[in-house]
Image (tube, rainbow, N blue to C red; front, side, top):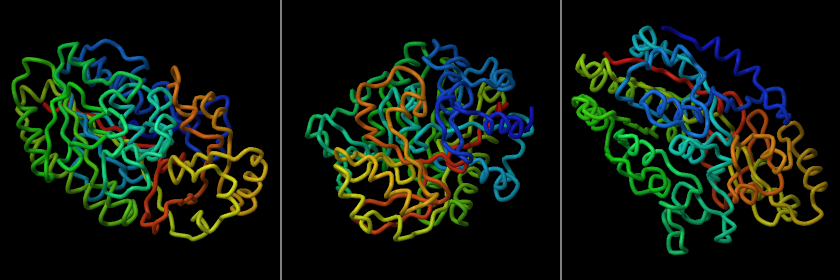
Length: 427
């Protein structure tokens, strides 16, 4: 086993969804076997659970590595792009190299939009964004008549008040139109566990995902990995799936940029503790039956604060919209007032030449951009009339507050869409 990144990258870079033109530099999602959509299918395949609706990863060498496992520890480090992970692996995180030498390293794609709410819902349902309907950080919920933040389940314009939609009748445990993976694993006699930071243990997104999952909270990195080791090192009387979510790199990348010293140092601290407090202290007997997966939900791209991308400076555009854009700053959805199609497209092309391309959202949905499968009934309403594709470091900022972000994601650049997948047996 060794580094298969270049071979997989050749496949991914040439991959195209057949019915949609996203431009020369866009990275198309590889939903047919080389994306994070396929990870839940592989987990079920390796642990002996019934198949999920979409295929497992199409990586035979990885199947060989996973043969006979009875425990999987899946570690999601939010917002680590492949092209950053590789130099970090040769730099401050070089202590991970033994896992590559004895295991597997490759590349896969995120989903569209390349954002946490959509990606982690895919990873905990085994369904595509088109099927589960979580199509961005902020989406229009027609049934409640508002734009909602899909992390904290509150109106998007509200600050610091999570869960306000519950008083309107939203039930996070039953909100998704597709089943989650936890009950599926339990039914197959597999124990599902999840380690998440205590600050998000009660978030709307967490409540949507972790039905029938044994939840473990942590405060710091050492607390996390000692807890994982104590659980994973127990004799395996029943197969186990242990999920770890870490959001520190994402938060620092948003604030300081994904190429910042802070982001790299935080990743190094996280993975160093993983090796010292978990991997190197696994018992040989249990470790031999354990597979470690390390991957990301999406990457990030560096952007520059620029008033020209702030929609408060473009009233001639916003007055042609029913509501302000939704979705992601790097993949906005526009709801057009009647008869404004031509005017909106003309404004965008003249004001930001080369920065944005628009496409009817129904075409993007039918072409499979948001994934395969049976569409959620709500998905068309949540995408509006036009989907805006961003090029270079462009974005749209519409919030009525100052723009604090340097790192962003949600779009289709290789920095946002290509993520690493590292796998190794621990004994």
